[in-house]
Length: 352
Image (tube, rainbow, N blue to C red):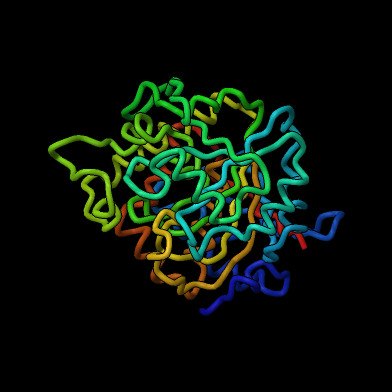
């Protein structure tokens, strides 16, 4: 049965959706939005990884198929109740002239609506345009992110955050300036990733907040002589880590989520869904999957799981699904579940 993503969330298509992704309870909210509640973990994507059944509460994940600043702001206002003080907006600013990075005008309008906020980033582990702070700042200007302050958090070193009950790590080195923030908004371009299979909210904080020359070594499990030097060879899918890399990302993401508690929220923008990350820059493969929309949640596991489920439900997602599966990427979800970082059961709430 062919089901388009836009029909996925229309009331007329609920019966068809149930056949594709499991049984839904559908209710009409007081406001013009549709609530689609999964009784159990979805039959596509992540359920096959977690192997768990859930009962009880469900996380709220807000969704719109409209990708623009007003809807991004609207969804953010539904999840920002615990956000206060100095706010860091974690954004993947991308390699120079990257074709798939989030639209600058949309991010500019969004940032202007978040009081006392600025973009936060860290330098890369591999030797490229963002390897040094000087080069990184030039890339930020090139890509048009200089409409507000951009804090390269590891410019002056790192800070160690503990990983409670980690799979592999007991602590992880984040950019030193991370602890200067009261709250974090994780604004993610959801897409594929050469090593992780997909890059969602977990990847954005687990790698994106780790310091370039210390934390990213830890998160990548980098060792010599077992692994080649950091560089493009890392992105060809031959890195030996696979599931271990997903677990390392979960360890790193848990450290940040534990540190900020309720003062961290997540927005995933599903557009320009290349199989490659924005770190691939102009060499990223052209997307073969249509844009989906924007998701927002206070639950990192629920939002990344919902995005994966939308990928697996889409009829044009073969390339991205192959990228996810060839890298064992769904281990990101089960690792977060084992770390109790969020809820695998969620309500998907359509916002017009």
